[in-house]
Image 1 (cartoon, helix red, strand yellow):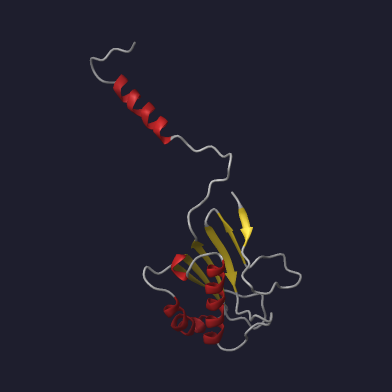
Image 2: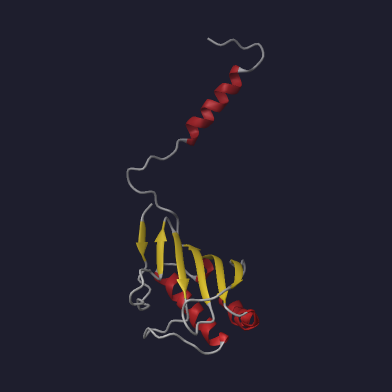
Length: 159
């Protein structure tokens, strides 16, 4: 497996050992918050926070070479269940069918004032096998299976 950080253009959070996104074997892994380009957090209503968080997700996926159509799963974390409807109203237009698989969790968030955090996975291109790694020989296994079946054929003698 080859893993690399994705340069999202989003500012690093001082003192935290995280990347906003990494990609490995064609899969993008990312967590997004309502983070502004200047490093401050949006603390407004759920609509503003959702829009900024999803804009950050789009920016990240595009930086990795994909689009929001490549997103396969989204995990949404909200500290208040009453924010679901507002989040959902903003979320819908960002995606089209087939929609990413999605789950919503009601839980506390680490960033003070944050009302949303999104974890997303996207398939960005195909996986690349690192040089020097052997490729399984499916053909050889199939041939062994056929030969084993022939050996069990009635009237056939093994040599």
